[in-house]
Amino acid sequence: MAQKKPTWVIEKERAKKASAAETIWLFGLHAVRDALLNPARVKLRLVVTRNAADRLSGAIAGAGLEPEIADARKFPVPLDPGSVHQGAALEVKPLDWGALKELCEPGQGAPRLLLLDRVTDPHNVGAILRSAEVFGARAVIAPHRHSAPETGALAKTASGALERQPYLRVKNLGDAMLALRDMGYTILGLDGEGEETIDALAADLTGQPVALVLGAEGPGLRQRSRELCHHLVRIPYAGEFGSLNVSNAAAVSLYAVTRQ
Image (cartoon, rainbow, N blue to C red; front, side, top):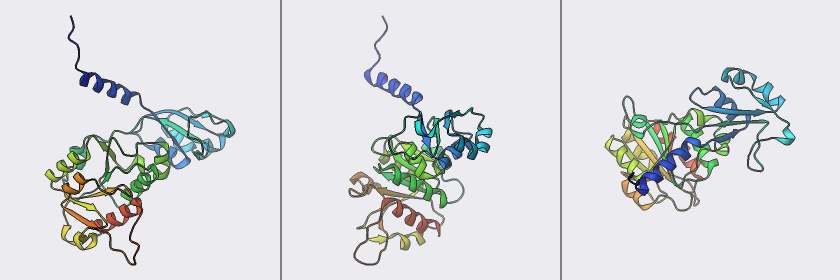
């Protein structure tokens, strides 16, 4: 008689199968073009209007994927209402950026990372990925749960950055922070009440690997995340109102620690 598998083994196998079967629809000319040009992206189905097909002709030819020509008024793709697809949608598999250690091991130079603590708005995360690419961040890291998954809305806001900027989702953000500390990263938590300003502290971190942790708007960093930071820092501001949208805060803080 075969021995019954433990519940946790069964659940893990189910999760693995579900992950393997998962697909997402990217939409919009920029997001679709960059995905078509990305050799690491597994592409399954391309639906375009004739106008979009003409505009994407070079990328389509290079991808080797036969497009389905559709009427813009009856676009046969399961997108959320209100999605501005611009006549182009591409079904793909999520990207696999590998393991935390291999991706974030400092090696040469002084890498910068962004860690997102329960930032769930795909538009914010998309904008953060754009800033991360502009300022040369090694990766953007978020927990599997309570974070923005890879979706068409996120990809469209990222305007192609999703295909080039590593977006790694980990099982536990606190455990990832501990691993980064072991790798030699200095971890800075963005907090409006932080005693030090990020620009003042950044000057002391030249040549060191740095990870910035940003929390969701409103709740901010969770207690464990705060405790695992080496420093809690704030962005200096003028006037009485000193709150930034999380994507703007990510851009400002990345600039502060990369210009050194």
